[in-house]
Image (cartoon, rainbow, N blue to C red; front, side):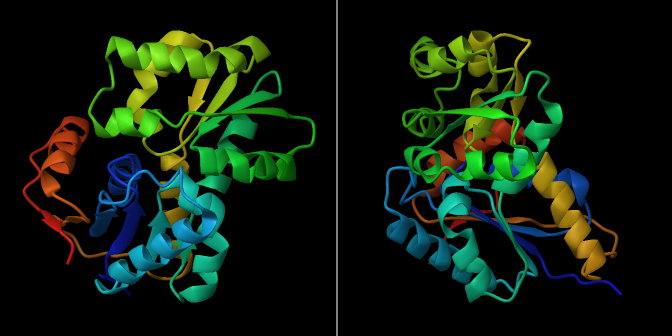
Length: 265
């Protein structure tokens, strides 16, 4: 059997392309429908109720494209809305918190893990809970970095000001001696170079994208939902605001021309 329905991915903006990229590698025969809620980014400063409402609307949009699986690429939405989404929709829905936590626990050498994320993600304590569910021996230190998302959305991923902001946010985690740092927002991998420069090469940076892609493949395989048809796939990209900024940023990140980005209606 072969299920040719697409996979749906949503994020608050361009950051979810980190998940898209890994899913494309892990599942090359799958078509992907990506939705970036660029009109309402950032999510991390908003209330749980608002984020949940946005998340439901995002999944409803993806369902219009008959998706067979939804990946919540946004850490904030995964932290606050995932359980509600799973109750509301029948398709399998995967968040990014648990896969990232598992990867960090398996990677730490000194049992000191740092987490950076939006205000909403950090306040939720989702990563701390996920790590502690795996191992009580690990110390988790968290830091919200609210300016990271707008810096990424602006395309300022290597500027001096970005390094200065990162050094202010990260100095406490560096002082704690963490050897593993969870990038608890899909925008943050786009700042890997800046974060690595400050934290040092010995600190391992964890983003959930690759683990999420592995989990997506496992679920589709176990459920008989893999697309086994050969041939190039025509991925679709939608945004909730003017596509121009998303196109420019995504072309830099994905290193390809983006001719298939549309404004959702």
